[in-house]
Length: 197
Image 1 (spheres, rainbow, N blue to C red):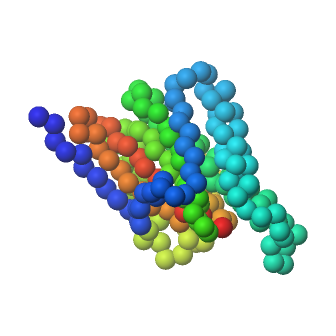
Image 2: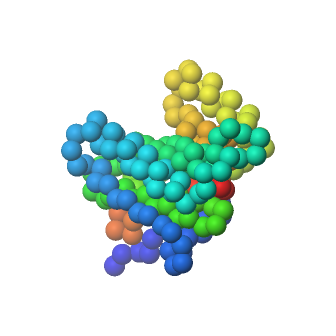
């Protein structure tokens, strides 16, 4: 008899409801085709998401800026979607044979990104360790600087993409890790990123 799945949640993890709001979901096979070609496809997909969601915003200029809101939304969505997909791809355990899924939900002044991938428990636990460090940090800018130095030294995973989304785009995050009830070494990683627009 299989045990129920163990779930760990970090942050304000609220899955958006698809009723009465615009949303889009893309699903990828982490093993289809050569890795280099798949990386290119993920970048194209992130750009598509940026183009798609930018159409919901007017082209008027933002206050004190030569850039309009549509261009700002397009760039932010493309960047965040690309970073989230790259992380999902990089840390997916291809032997699990589960798809990588990205969904974007549009509310009046909020875009919620949801990315799900599957990995092994050791990789997920490394990520959880970083999340705990992130949530305990008093100052994200100081943590950003520390991780930048770590990246420059090539000292393990820097998580610079995540920190850049937080510092440059003011994205907020929440995470859910679910152990597979059939295999304790398999975990689903469910990431939510909230972008105010």
